[in-house]
Length: 92
Image 1 (cartoon, rainbow, N blue to C red):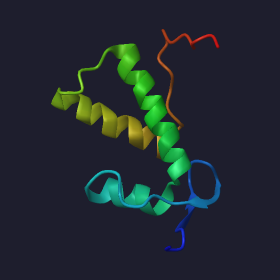
Image 2 (tube, one colour):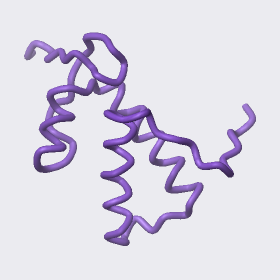
Image 3 (cartoon, helix red, strand yellow):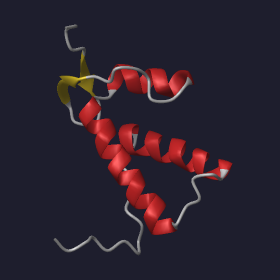
Image 4 (cartoon, helix red, strand yellow):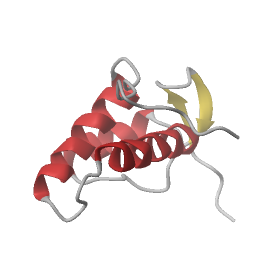
């Protein structure tokens, strides 16, 4: 079994297991692969799922791809992603 690759996660501010491969092509994928943990990227995917549902985004629309990339940059490297103004968390 291969040794787990660790990264200094820019999102969670600690050393954690990194991703197995870049999640998207190009420079952004490389930046995420080198600087974001699996845990933080999973947090982003959960966040983006909420965005898709809240705004009823069409995942087949190329414009949604750009929203995905913009939200990924903001969530992982920016201020952390802003919840939609209309968002009401589910009651557990």
